[in-house]
Image (tube, rainbow, N blue to C red; front, top):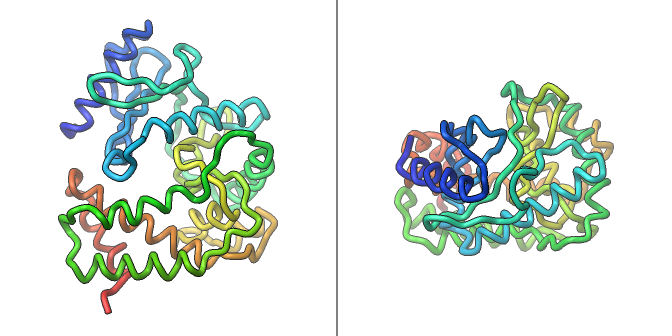
Length: 280
């Protein structure tokens, strides 16, 4: 357990206890952009902002947007992890940490196939078109210049310049026609296999933009057949898909570079992404 994860778990237990939830045996489920803590034996999961605070000075707004959009989707029958009914569905603070609380869902850890991803994303987008809340335009892309403005630990000056040039070029190519509310990070890893079927989770990056942004999260993956995802979605050639795929890879590049600042075991993966953007 990293020091960041330990501090997050301790804060989550304290805040949950103040709300009447006893998490006497906390279990770290994930440690990355956020620390995800199952507050066992309670059926409650805490999501505590971790690496996100380095790029997003107001993480509470992102966490609240996630709570709001999942509540909306659940009310329309979209299978999604939902806020915990045991505490108020708002962002909570404690020990300098920012967090939200979710209903615990047991997952097998399996990943969905292409047909599942495409069809479920189509249904999700249909429901999201009716979302009345705020969904800032492609707000996750702001992570890229925010990262490049920080001191770097693994990037050379030439690498940083290459990423900045790619960001400028790709955002100039990106058109925002036909924007609608999106998941924001609709990769295969954000579909969870449960006893009741597949459910969406991790809506922290909810934004508005072209549907290609969400489709790029899975079709840009080398281990998935993008054509099968698009066929199941029902749009074989969505506008802006190629540029969104490149922007998605660029987004992952800066996030993995950030992760290595406290998770050195991810350095090889970060290097793989950096190699996609050779310095001139």
